[in-house]
Length: 152
Image 1: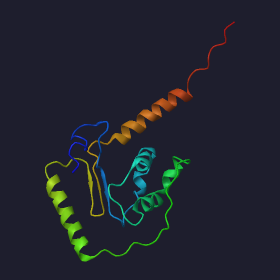
Image 2 (image 1 turned 180 degrees about the horizontal axis):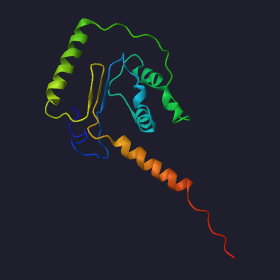
Image 3 (image 1 turned 30 degrees about the horizontal axis):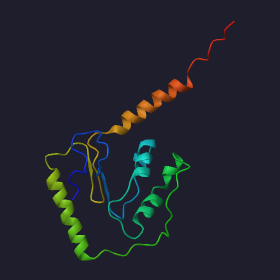
Image 4 (image 1 turned 90 degrees about the horizontal axis):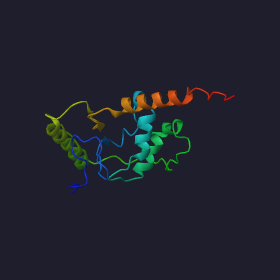
C-alpha cells in the first residue's frame, strides 16, 4: 500500500517520502514530559495521522498543547473533548496481535526505538540532540557577534 511512498531504511533524508515513526494508542496521546523540547514540538506540529476517527488528530493536539510554549502562534485544531467509546474485543485482540507481529518483525532490527504497549517511536537515529545542539551554537553566534567597529 505504501510501496514507493515510504522513506527507505537507513536514509536520514528522503524528500517527498513518508516516515512512519510514531504509533500511539488513543489512551496515550501525550508525549512524556522528559521528551518535550523544541525538536519534538516541531515534530508534533508536522505530524499527520494516516488514519483517524473520533477527532483523533484534534485530541492528539489537545493532549500535546504544550507545543504552544515553543510555537505560540501555532493554531491547534479544536476538539469537543468527548470521551471515546470502549473498544470491542475484536479490535483489542487485533491490536494485541499487531503489536506482537511488530515486535517479531523488529527483533533483529532494533536500535534505540521506543517500544511500549501504548506507544512505538521509530527513531533509530536521535537527530534531536544534534539539531538542538546546532541551534544553540547558531543562537550563540548570532547573540554574541561583535559590534561593528566605528570607522574614523
